[in-house]
Image (tube, rainbow, N blue to C red; front, side, top):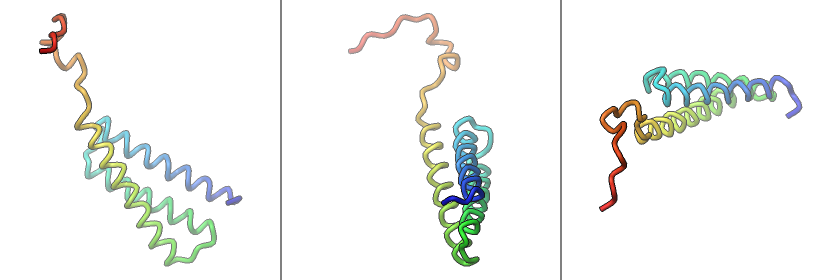
Length: 105
């Protein structure tokens, strides 16, 4: 993989995946909007990556869409899981501020 264009497309794929993860975790976008952006962006990056490696059209479309969709689904699922199970911030719980910790029973 000595083709500089291939490396650029893989970096763009990584940045797309990172953006999708952060957009779900930080609630910048809804889950569905993040998923659509991830699928379209990831698929496009991988299609261009396969083309830069001298792949044919059918191979680029099938594997690009498959890999882009799979990574986006996994990224949104993981980010949604971590977002749902994250501990609330102390500032979100004003009734607990200033109180001593409760003793275990």
